Structures are given as C-alpha cells and as structure tokens.
Length: 170
Image (cartoon, rainbow, N blue to C red; front, side, top):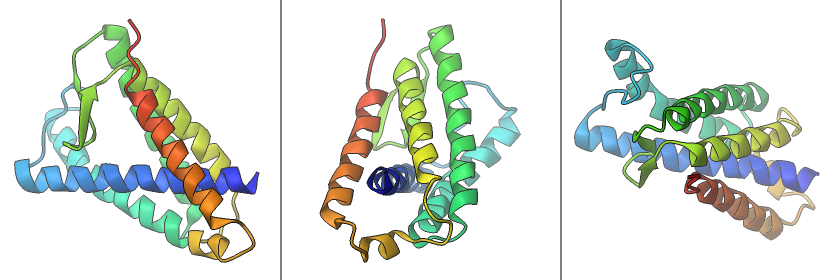
C-alpha cells in the first residue's frame, strides 16, 4: 500500500510540474488566455488563469518536500474536482473546447477523456492522502522502499493519466 501511495504522490507531483511549467511558459509567450468555457466572468477568469500555474507548481514543491502535504493533497482533490466538472460540462454539451491542461505541451479537446483523467487523479490523491503528513519524497526514498519500483510505477501512473486524457468516447 505504501508503494501505491508513494507512486500516486509522485504521479501527482509530475502532473502538476508539467502542467504548471507549461502554463507559465505559455503565459510568458502569449499572455493570459481567457476562459474558453465562459465558466467564470472574464476578469475573474483572467486572475484564475494567471494564478493557477503558480499554485500547481507550489503544490508540486510542497508535496515533494513534505511541507503541509495533507492540506495540499486536499487542495489537489478540490482542483481535480473543479477540472472534472469543467470536462464533464464540455463533454455533456459536446463542445469543441480546447483543453490547456498542459499548456501548449499537449493540447486536445475537453471532454470524456479529461473526465477519466481527473477521476484517476482524484484516486491518486486519495492514495497519497494515506502518507504520513511530515514525510518528504526524499525521506521515503531513503528508506527500505525500493526507489526504482516507486519511480517506475509513478511514471506508469502518470502515463496512465495522460492516456486517459486522450480517450475519445463517441
């Protein structure tokens, strides 16, 4: 169980690292893009789209160093539920809205694949929530846990999340 929890935590960190970094690069290159789903008023959408990448990177750092891990896992669950709702809204409307989950790194359409991806990420968060509050990734990797198994399984979980994102249900 500890292997699954640790792998889930690292998969969440990888997801937030790539997502946050790609969005920050996009902001630097193109500025802040408006909300394409019109979920929020335009001004509020601007602020959220500017703040979100930095929050994702902060979550990645805090989970990695074990700073306030459980509160940040709860924040992650909240974010993934919001993303789940947005993807579900787009899927039910069958809209052709571009998903910027990973900025310009991997673009696609919002919809059922995003619903599946966010369900997986919420499940990862629930497993990660089982970890000790004050533990860092380095602290666990320095123990008797086999680091290669954890790193490989984390990469597989991250890959599973990306694969789920690209599923098209027609």
